[in-house]
Length: 328
Image (tube, rainbow, N blue to C red; front, side, top):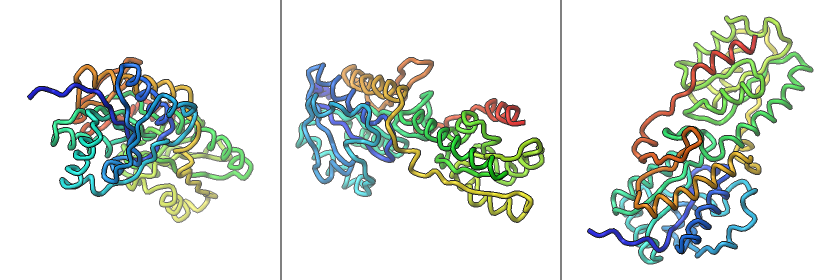
């Protein structure tokens, strides 16, 4: 079967929004147009294919968006796309719109859907990793991670002012259901005393280790960053344990929540998104499919969906030890 020449590329964002997604949309659109291709924007993720919310994009459609957080294409969950019937309908929509290939921007769930769809219909798809969790294998960093990290750092800096004033122990919960990158690096950047993350076996071990290591022995106040994962117990769960087991501590909890997703992307995220967006179009023009753009040692790489999704991205445990040393 001869592969159809690509004349029109579709682009969508799916899953949780991440700062820098707009920069990626801009790069995909303009790189495609520069190469003589049409670009069709699909709104609300895979749902846009089901409800036919698709628009032809020109270069002016992506003007003045590089500095905006969120995604101008919106994002939504789509149960229909998880069914064979829904994907069949989506494929029909792509054929009707004469879209020859897709660029999808999102996280693990987005790429999982893309991989299934691509294999079912032999359809060219390239993914761009857009998630603040930084949990996709094969790339040193993901779009939105740097901005979220800076947001966390700024929030913790402010909380430290009141923690110090009141001699308090603060548990600050950050995002990262299955990955502790935000908690660990946020703790290092903000000078926190510890990070409790899902990659380390159990919440009991981490809390007890914290206390037994002479926690707060030389300080009036302490800040601990906690990943929101069930395996950590979350900030509320840990605070409740401390109140019962170590009542001498005056404990407070702050859950940063969706503030971490928002805001104007940092320079690093804008540059990363621009490079990945351009690279995604180049990959499609080179005949690649079922791959995610990544960055390794400041070089663009292409990672098979199967590796990016299936493999767990390892946490650097040396950083945990460094955090422990620096918090004495």
